[in-house]
Length: 303
Image 1 (cartoon, helix red, strand yellow):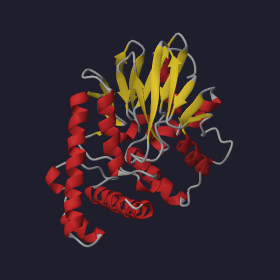
Image 2 (tube, rainbow, N blue to C red; image 1 turned 120 degrees about the horizontal axis):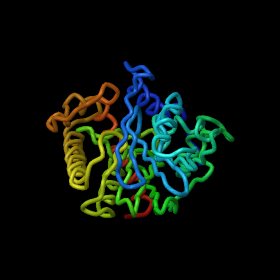
Image 3 (tube, helix red, strand yellow; image 1 turned 30 degrees about the vertical axis):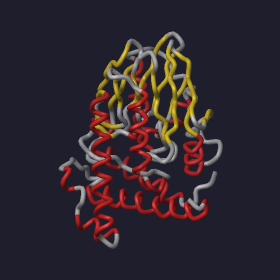
């Protein structure tokens, strides 16, 4: 699988990482551990939330934040169980979720991710790099480890084109990666990496159908929450889409839509790296470029 614009594909990852690194020294990272079940924890640090599974079979992680945090992350893991993680699952390719891949691989971990994550990391780090997954999958994969059945499910064209959501059957937890930003904000739709607003909405809707009322929901960023909060997030995404569609219909181009500030009525929080203007531009691109592509497909199929 090829990617024609490597620079654009990784710009989002660089900007995302820069936000979490700016104005904060590495030594000042305040790690926090939260227990979700007997053998499943979430580690908050600097970058994407890390899920840690421990038990009789060993240790495995979901995401690993930044390379320079790897040693401290290992120390945090050691407070739960000694040993190197057997596996590291990447929810997608962005650097604040995959930056530690090489360090953990050199310590003996085996990286697992979707095929598109493999291709994007290969384009960035080259063939044979320790950053790359040694196991990649398509639609889904199940990891039977630590008396758990962790179901990795690929949602195409959501936050990126390689997103994996992890459903922990016994722990009754879902780890969503950056499909879910639990920050009173809208998500980062990485259009240049195959992401789309409709894909995020579809992924959230599908996840809600798969989980129970008491399932714990772990986002890519923000605190662990519950199904009702994820349902509210879906409503927010749908409102944002509708506001954008109205603005796109009323205005002629992206500049006019941005100036109209269609998302302002939602009164959300925005970060320095993802201000309202940038979200508006990304949503505009997602909705308009997708419409053009669909129109072309309809012409071909005659639908």
